[in-house]
Image (cartoon, rainbow, N blue to C red; front, side, top):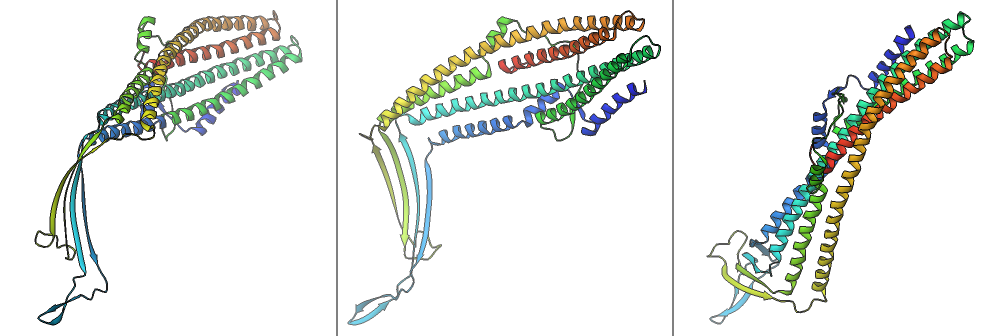
Length: 433
C-alpha cells in the first residue's frame, strides 16, 4: 500500500519538475492570447496594414506631385573676362558662383480611368486581406483549442493511469496473499508484478505527455511562462445551430469571403486593363530661377525667374502587344478567381458535412464508451471478488483489467475527438457555436 501511495506522488513530482506550478488558463483566455500572439496572426495583420497603405497610395494617384530643386556651383580657377573700354583693355572680375532654384507640380488629368479601377482593386485587396486576417484569428483559435484539449486529454490519461496502478497494486497484494495461503501458484504473483510494472510505466508516460501538452499549449498561446489548461465542465459540447443554419453559415465562411473578395479585385483589374487603349492627359507647372550668385541668394533680386505651364497628351498607338497581353492575362485571372470561389463554396460545404459526421460519431462513441467503462468496472469488481475466493483465475482478472484500461483510453479519445470536431466547425464557419 505504501508503494501505491508513493508512485503517484513521484509521478506528480516529475511533472512538477518540468513545469513548476504552471498558471491555469481558461479556454477563452487561451484563445484570446493565441489571437494576439500567434505568428500567423501577426503576419496577417502586417499584410492587412500593407493592403491599407495600398488604398492610400491609390488615392494619392489623384493628387498632384510636387518637387523642389536647388543647387549652387563654384567654378575653380576663374580668372575673369577682358574687354576694351575707351581704347584700354579692362579685366572684368568673373563671379565663380552660379545658382538655381525651381519648383514644379505634375498632375495627371485623365488616364482612361485606370486610377479609378486601381483604387477599386486596392479596396477589394484590402477586403481580402481583412478576411485573411480574420481567418488567421480562427486558425490561431483552433490551434489553441487543440492544445488546450490535448492538456485535458493528458490530464484524464494521468487519472486513468493512476487508477490502473492502484488496481494493479491491489491485485498484486491479493495474488501474493493467495500464493502464501497455497490457494494460487507463484505464477499469479509474478503476473501481478508484471501488471504493476506496466501500470508504473503508464503513469510515467502519462506524466511526460502532460508536461509536453503544457509546453505545446504555452507555444500555441505565445506565453513565455508555464501555463496549463484550467479544469472545465465535463459536459460534452453541443452545437448551438441546426444543419440548415450551418449550411447557410458556409456562404459567409472566411475562406468563401476571401475568395469572393479576390474575384472582385480580379474583375476590377480586368476593367482597368482596357484603359491602355485610351489617351492620357497631364498638366505640368514649373517656376524656376537662375543667376550668378552664391548659395542662399535666391531672392527675386538675385535670380532671373520664369514660369511655365504645359499640357501634354499621350496616346500609344502600338506597344508591341503589351496592352493585348494585359487584357488576356486579366481575363484569365477572372476565370481562375471564379473557379476558386466556386471551389471554396463547395469545399466549405464538404468540410461542414465531414465535420458534422465526425462530431456526431464522436458524440455517439462518448455515450457508448461511458457505458463500456461502467460495465468494465463492474466486470473487474466481480472477477476480483471471485478470484479472492477462488472462483476465477488471475488471467480472468487481468483480462478484465485490460478491457477496463482500454475502455478508459477509448473514452478519453472520444471526448477529445468531439471537442476537436466542434472547434474545427467553429473555425470553418468563422463563429462560435
